[in-house]
Figure (cartoon, helix red, strand yellow):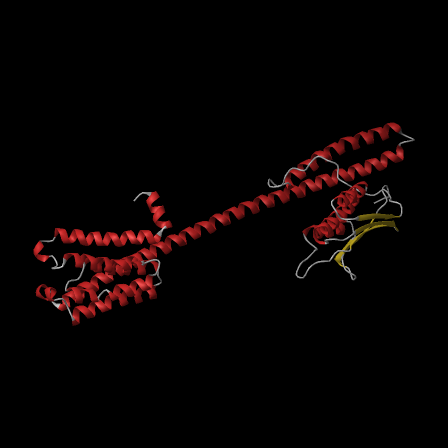
Length: 397
């Protein structure tokens, strides 16, 4: 059988079973033609019609297996009416026994075999066909039918066991492949972490050296310019080495699935006003209020402030609906406070406005020793608040 025909039969099981039933009827016709005319049934066309009826349960063997078994048992009345047992009837019993044994659990398969062949044994014992008794005894007919049933059942169970074994081997191979892939990924991740730790130590050492050299150069700059120049040259060379190590560190930590970062400057405080204007153009009325004078601060802190405002305004655009928003930046007491509020409808029932973005912002704020709070406002709407301590640049660490 070609692979195309086999695939078609798998996609259309009912059509395949109907072809099998037609094959049983064709076998009945061939068997009749090769038999001497003296043994042909008296009503040949009627006998062939009964053969079609006896073969019909095969067409339902996978679509409706138990109704097919019941229909096959019901056809045992055909020999009593016709006076002859169609060959298709015996083949149907064999096919159904095999099908149930190959595709069903052992209890269901055994029950189907008993349901099929026990009535056959009873019929051969109680009311055997007259022609059969002339050649064979009733006990021989019973044993012959039982032997056929046992063989059909055994072949079906062997196929069932082989399928189960093949499926178990497939599952074991799949699990082994997944485990191997997981171990390989784990080994790669462990190696990346080890390299990252080593490069981190190297970068930290270089940065410490640059800090010490820069302090020494500042102290001797006026009384010994040559020594200061030499120290600054060392700082320059060390900074280049640090940049190279940082580049390697980023290459190690960057995965293949992550897109390469664009070589653009990171936004900071100067980008907050542009961000507010962009959100206002998108349809959300936003006002920006700045209290206090911004001090020089680390780029990481400025970037964190920008990301908090960006995430809060993005959520307001998505969830607030027809509302207004306000961004407030307060610089006082060695800290910066960021507050973004909106007057929207607030989070709906069962929804969580604090998504992955705000979780990431909380981690970033915690990195700089700050706190972040986000949740519904008492009067409606949503509020995101963060307070981050700001160290004056140039202060001793």
